[in-house]
Length: 143
Figure (cartoon, rainbow, N blue to C red):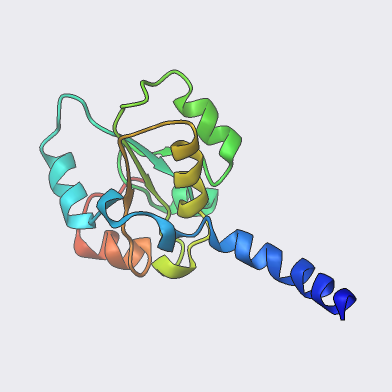
């Protein structure tokens, strides 16, 4: 019986660990809706947020938010990009690969920045995908 419990623990532990870094665990007060981000960017703020696309390179190449930088989901690339920034610098993360609850990228990217002590991180809440929730709404897109 003990061997069975050990086997189950080995099988279940990775699944539980992967859930800890999902988009669903990002606090709602750290989410920014697409319309709000579009309005913010249209205002051309004096201190614009750093926008990091943490999805695939193919998605970024096809279409991305103007001014967004590609780091992909790579934690080392994210860390390198923010290394010289103040911990209070405004940062916005987004992916848009798939529906919010299934996105494998924004949760770990957010967790990386939180672990580094960044306090002004928002995540673009993309309910369905980038095409539906950003591009199809007429918000600006760069290629």
